[in-house]
Amino acid sequence: MNEYVLISDSTADLPVEVISKFNIDIVPFSYSIEDVVTEYTLTEGEDAVAEFYNKLRHGAMPVTSQINPYIYKDFFEKYIKEGKDILYLCFSSGLSGSYQTAGVAAGMLKEKYPDARISIIDSRCASVGQGVLLYLAMQKKAQGMSFDELEAWILDNKGDVSHWFMVEDLFHLKRGGRVNTVEAMVGTMLKIKPILSVDEEGKLVVKSKARGVNKALEYIIERLKEEAKDLSALTAVIGHADSMEKAKKLKEMAVEAGMKEENILIAPIGPIIGTHVGAGMAAIAFLR
Image (cartoon, rainbow, N blue to C red; front, side):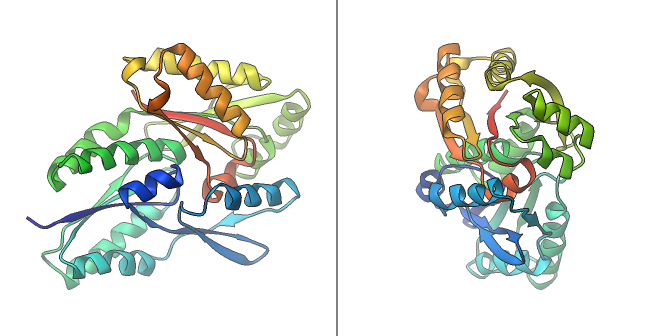
């Protein structure tokens, strides 16, 4: 049986030290600001992410673009040449065409290397949701799970990842068509904080709205308590878009609800997701 690699991409928000510890290779997605294209690999650190959000707060309007299938092909092929199988946990097909593009690249490689095993898994997750699924999968692999066992575990569990996001800036949601101009203007004036989740198709959906940050965080913690079977055994990833104060508050509230502090990771939400949600977002994700 061949050795295999677990791969993901730069929408799976996790702390730099976790990516380094498990030596996970990340397919870099890119964003551009004023025609300057930057690749993001999850290893840039808090300062680089904070610089991105500082640009947003000063009016920058970044955009992301669809990844080229040949980037995937080259990324995967280096492992195939080493005789390794590939298990790729991909960004949600409900939010991007990357899953389909990765499949095209895998098909090209299968023609060239008929014996290669390349499993492209649509995570139906985003940001810290994809991150917590990847983190748990990393642990399973480190514990000795085979390719087939880990593939089956991911497929069985990906639908049970729960995402809860609080967004600070409604105008970034307006750019993505999630709220209209009037909702964005009125919501901003009234300090309305939309709360979002990811549905069964892996699409972003507005689930509720709260007046102010504290009410939004309280709503998220209530969802955590409702959906988690055993808070004391739960692993969660909290993400923040240059809003560490909210992340620390959310962690404190999760611990008060019954989670163990050592089971909670805090990660920066990178520029790929940040382009679409703006600065100030706070999120938590866990396996129900």
